[in-house]
Image 1 (cartoon, rainbow, N blue to C red):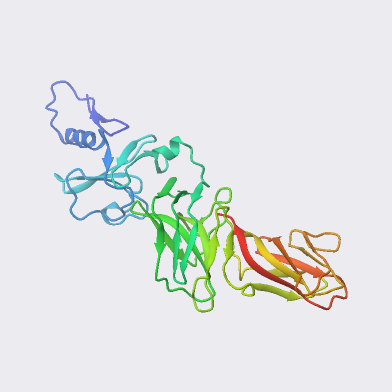
Image 2 (cartoon, helix red, strand yellow):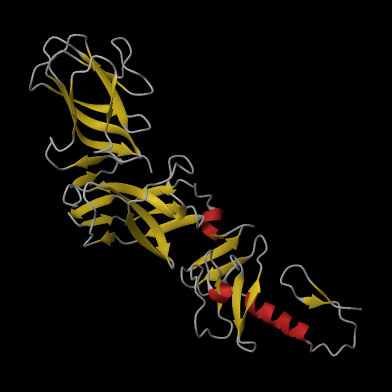
Length: 348
């Protein structure tokens, strides 16, 4: 009877009794058993094969691997010293291994390796906790401890110590976006101008073109490339700690609905702006809405009553998808409506 290869570990069986048995197929059997009985891998995120691996050294091959691991994504690579070569095993749905680098068990779900507890606990794909942004200085930003689901990993990334970026050299008057990712299993912070993509689940976002980067928040630089001072509170709102005139987005008296962009003060993920509004016209009211509710004297989101210079309304302006609002004043208005922004809420 001819031997054949089984469908799980790829072991060979079905030999005729009396066969010598010590064939190349038996070596394959022992190699597979050595690799997968009490299966453990060194790492799950290394993309370059190590130069001098120990006999039996095992890795899960991630996307983007190079050299001998190229085009072997998700396979288990095992170094067989006898052959001076890597042996690759294609995982089956449900295979489990332990990663020494991350001290976690990984299960193959049929398309990707994910941390077992994230599957077991059914962590929602938009989960995020903690990870508040902290302004340290004009050139330094931090993110506090916490955790967030990383789409490409299919699990939570646990940040057990504050992450800090220092000595940043940033372009003037530019929005920068903070992302959490794992570098060889270590939570790492990235600050780049690439904006987050549309929400992939709920309100959760990842970097455009890169689901390994989970969006944390955004920071803005001034005309000298310094990060504007701010406070990110526990409820998720961001408040600027700069002069109130820094973000004056409107001085006008339009009597037809007119759009006002807030992108100079709020990021692309913002949904509301915190504003101080002064109506300097003592005889004409003003109305505020947005593209979703174009304001009129009978249809508006906010009514700005007849005022006088120095009388300020503190309110929250609901923004549209372009981070804008619309306003108009009663016909005949001559004095200006002035809107200054002092913070915002955003989605992540």
